[in-house]
Image (cartoon, rainbow, N blue to C red):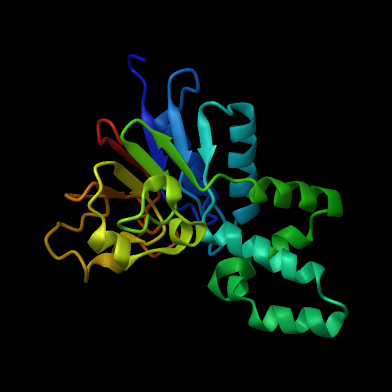
Length: 236
């Protein structure tokens, strides 16, 4: 379609003000555009539930134009609630809260917001999160949260790699399709890629990788959206 854009948004991590500002800038047109959220809408930031709800409702309103992908933080949230459902008493709950990886890595910001929801409202959100797709393919572009395992066909990738992989993908991917990911803030990759200028924009690698996480929750971090066709970038 003439004039259409294919836009990918990096990790939002509870930054609702930045999300709203970014959406105003991109002027999303569901009749022409594709808008792919690369996962990790939640955790670390102060307004995870607002971010989750905003994108969930936007995706339900425009199911053909908006894609919300599973991130490792959405998976960790689901794992926590699956474990919570198996607890037998208050002691089990306290032990879960002390040992949960989700709570250590930012879920402690999200849990209090979810606990204020009624049982039905919470379950509706968990059901939605449980059905988030792991990837989205469009032409020569493959979108996922973290990356793909090198040497494995794209249609045979496993969930653990799609939402967790890091260095093995960054250094070893040699596929023809361009893989568009979030997951690791570019601020944390400077040690690995010393051949590029670090200007707080998404990083486009020679081996067909686009890194879109520009550390929205970090000090001086930004929330980025890139049109993967034109490489135009919007930020908040």
